[in-house]
Image (tube, rainbow, N blue to C red; front, side, top):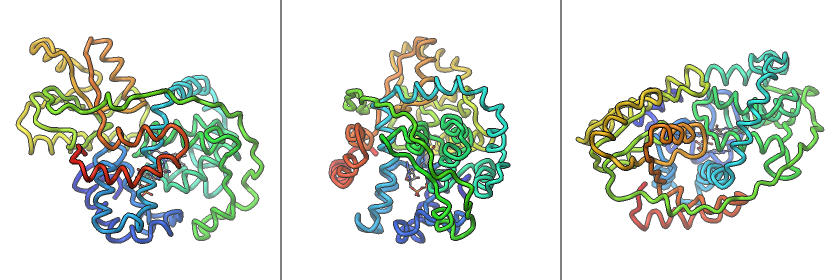
Length: 394
Ligand SMILES: Cc1cc2nc3c(=O)[nH]c(=O)nc-3n(C[C@H](O)[C@H](O)[C@H](O)COP(=O)(O)OP(=O)(O)OC[C@H]3O[C@@H](n4cnc5c(N)ncnc54)[C@H](O)[C@@H]3O)c2cc1C
């Protein structure tokens, strides 16, 4: 069950099941959506990977214990798409800023009947309506279905891509600013010049094995939207190395990997899912349980003091900073998105110096995410080899 992957134990069981039952057919079958996770061949691990309940490196290593690299290359590449999108956005923070800015000016369009029909699954296009309800009730959609959904939203229903991306951010268990924003932009045709993604009735029929066939209902001739070039910034990810000893560490909902942790004096753990953004009840519950599961795992393993906090009440952290004269608090880098903005805002407001660190996976891969995916793809095998040869953090 997807919603149970908030627990490290359950997420690990899901990974084991994928390795045993599905991984061998992944590359051939991954584009089919048969309507249930039991029948589909994708892993369903994205909610756990997004929160790093399971890290990308851990998942890849586990898969490689049972298969040769080439037998599961497609799956590893998909894992790396996530890494690529994240690295790509890091190099182009303006894409995220522009998205937030656009969203503000588009809010009034939520009153349009076409928006209301799309969100409630009443457009009259059966497949879209079914996926819209699935999104609301299951908080997950298959990758191919996300592509069809986004394409119909933009090119047939003529709704702004930004409002579709916002809807996904509210409802998906795996909502991730980079993968989501950039995928919506790609479907819209503003990621790659002169290339948008147009869903076709025949393709939907084939990959749902006939469950849906919206013949004559989809716009086949969508126009290319204006494309804007965003030049990559120069970044030095070596500045994000994790120091050997960390006394004061803050853990947040974007990185719940125990591998961030070595002995600490004080560990501040976020207690509730970020309140300042709109999220569905299910998504909040998933994140709250994931934070709780993380706290339980740390408590079992470490003896340092654990201090829960919320973004609405930073007092416990402030008191300790004052009492212990703390100069800086370390934290896993939250990546571009709402959480990073919130941490930076609070840091400024309360005069707290946060020092972010990345794991070796990101430090090694992100420099290759400046341009197209192909450049990063070529680095996958060499980087995995480096990570396995040198004992770097996970
Ligand atoms: C419009 C749109 C919006 C999306 N929004 C998100 C989002 O908010 N968060 C998110 O994690 N993914 C997003 N994706 C990417 C992809 O759909 C999901 O990662 C994937 O469906 C997760 O299901 P899975 O774990 O069963 O995938 P699997 O096929 O089992 O893949 C394994 C892992 O690889 C990664 N992955 C697979 N496909 C992609 C992809 N196309 N892009 C990036 N990473 C991928 C995920 O971490 C996934 O868990 C979006 C795609 C589209 C087209």
